[in-house]
Image (cartoon, rainbow, N blue to C red):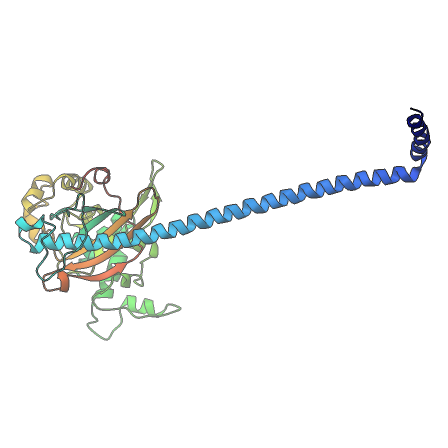
Length: 385
């Protein structure tokens, strides 16, 4: 007991001296401040490391999603290519095989390997003249192909200037602009009958980067781009706001004009409204009625068209209307995959003919077509029609 008390008594003066020693108090305060600074440094370092971890996680997640989108886009592209081939096969079969053999997927065209495109439960859809949409359910995704014969468009090499001007008016150009552009196109496609330059030739020669007019029939629709009065907005289509606050896209000229074929007659089963309005005597009401009827049942003769749009059918069919399909088609395949928002569209201009290898020839190809038309919802939700 005495030793304990002695230790307490002896230690007390030491503590009292420490309390009264200013250097000891400064050391204690310095250590306290150093501890606070170290704590703040650790906190800031933790925040910085957390921010770096979040940034790295975001970048990794973004790169993974981007890689996934690229993979899905590549898969969609090859699905679309397959859908084009399947559509060509369906159209060739419906054209060159007898009706009894068209629906049999085991029957191939003479000297033609059987393609693997199928629809539904292993059965390929049969293309019917007047049909616009074909659907293919592949194991990797669903593809919808829009079929449009080239004679559904105005042939830019043969259409008279009045029809071209009416088409441009339907696309929103003023009457003066439409007439001027139509005359410029006629001058561009017409051969020079003399050595004298036209007004358009002199206009092209006066440009900062002069060029000469083609003065020959067009081989590609893109050759219209240098024509006086043509704009890229008009050629590729534009979007405008409607009075009700919505948006409307004017189609590109690739959907309205063509250089394929030699005829000037238009197929009313496929012709866009702007093309119908360009035909002589057609009004918006008649064009809307024809479009509404053909979506239910395609016209099989000009007489049926006469019943829907009087004075637009049999009497004038020989001049500018035809129900024939023609050998040239524009096929636009749009493919999607399950649980993916990525869609890929491919367009091809093909000729279906018995004198071509494999009964078809691809005349033009677009890997990424940015303006696919929307198929009817009934086709997407229901069975192949």
